[in-house]
Amino acid sequence: MVLLTTVVASTLSARRSIAIEQAGRKLLLDIRSLQNKALAVRPVFILGVPVTPYSYVVHISKKVAGNKFYTLFADINNNNTYEAGTDVLIDDVYFQSGIIMQDISAPHPQETNIVFRLPSASLGFFNPVSGNPIATQSVIAVLEDTVTGNTRTLTLYTTGMVSLK
Image (tube, rainbow, N blue to C red; front, side):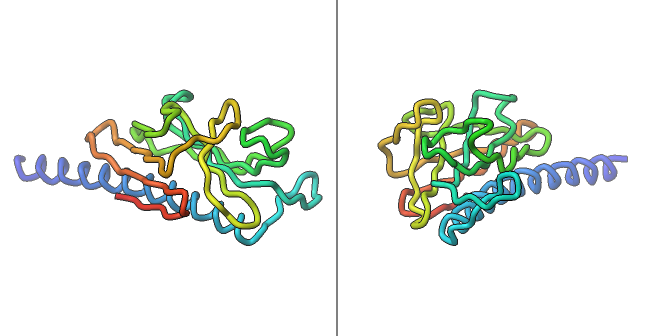
């Protein structure tokens, strides 16, 4: 019985470790994907018509839906903020159960927009409410597994480098 309990506990712990790792990698891959779309000057389609956005944006936030998702969108009107009906929502990406956006280290610590401008894919950080640039060289986002307390830290630099630890 003790052996069975140990095996079950180890299995659950391993699954949680995999969940936080997958969440960090998914966020990293989504950021890289938008960076690549900006470099390739990929259009988005509005009612079947190709439109070249000014930028591709990842919106990360601790303010909404219990910190459990981030938003990917194409900025059509060049204001660095998401406006439904004008900009193109690519996806709202939800974390697995128990995974949250625990911290964002930026001058606007509740939320920030990570912006890849076309055609250079230059990376900038912007206030998601005003659309104004945030004067910082890097943003750190920390994902946390609320069950185990394990974290993964994603660091983004204005040079375009992204690291996951």
